[in-house]
Figure 1 (tube, rainbow, N blue to C red):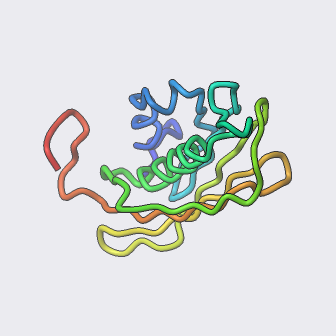
Figure 2: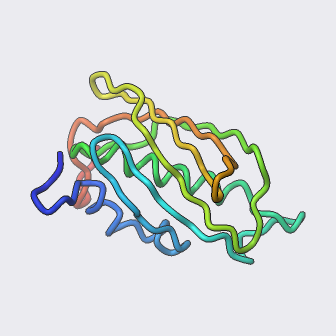
Length: 142
């Protein structure tokens, strides 16, 4: 559900997302079941092999997934997600996660997210969503 100024419920959700913003994730776009988010890999995101820790790549993909599934309006959460790491990422890499809704039926949805570094795919993520029976934004139980 897009608002008149082009903002969606996903934009409002991201405004309150201190975890993603604290890691430097930026919302590029969100709307109608899609979203794009970016993150630069920093030294604090490296693992013991001096490459990007997969958990941070997962978090970026999960953030894009959350933005895409919340772009419709009702509060929606992850029911599950999995990722395939295809290439290592390194300090300084700018990653872009592009999420696309594949199917939404009732309160359930499936979304695919591709994580890019320039023109290379570094990871593929699939997320399963569940729209809550009532909106929890503002603290109510779901």
